[in-house]
Image (cartoon, rainbow, N blue to C red; front, side, top):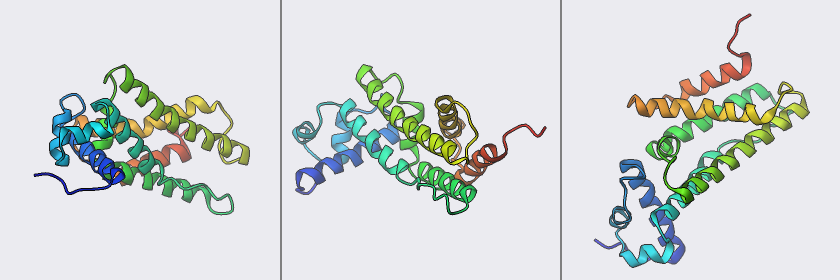
Length: 196
C-alpha cells in the first residue's frame, strides 16, 4: 500500500517517523532502507529523494529525538523554588525518555559502532547535550545554586545518571520506571550518596 501524496516536508517527516519505528523495533544494524520504505509506504526513489542512506535518516532521527527530549527541560527561574524546578525538569526529562520508548533506548545502547559517519552524528548529538548541561551547571554556579567545581566532568556524570538507567532497563528487558529514576537522580543531586 502506497502512502498518500504529501508535500516534500510532510513526506520527509513521515519517512523519519517510519525510520524511528523501524529502528526502535529492529535496532539500527538489522534495520534496512527497505524496512523503512515499507513502513512509510513509499517507493524507493521517494526515500532517496530525501535521504542518501540509512545513516543519514538515522541522523535525522537523532536530531528529532534531541529536540523532543531536550525541549522538555525548562529554564530555571531563580525567583522560584530552585529545588522543585530541578525536580520537575528531571521528571519531565525521564517521562520524555520513557515515552519515546525503544527509540531512546536505541540511541543510548545501540548507536555506537554504526560506522564512521554515524559515530560523528552521535558525537554531535552528545556534544550538544553536554554543552547544554555544562551551561546549566555554569549558570547554577554563577547564581550560587550549584557547588563550585569542574563542570565538564560533572556534566558527563549527570548524563551518565540519565543514560545508564535506560540502558540497564533495556538489558534487563524491563520497562523504564521514569518517576523512580527522576526521584533517584534528584536525591543524588540534592544530597549526594554519602551520609557522613
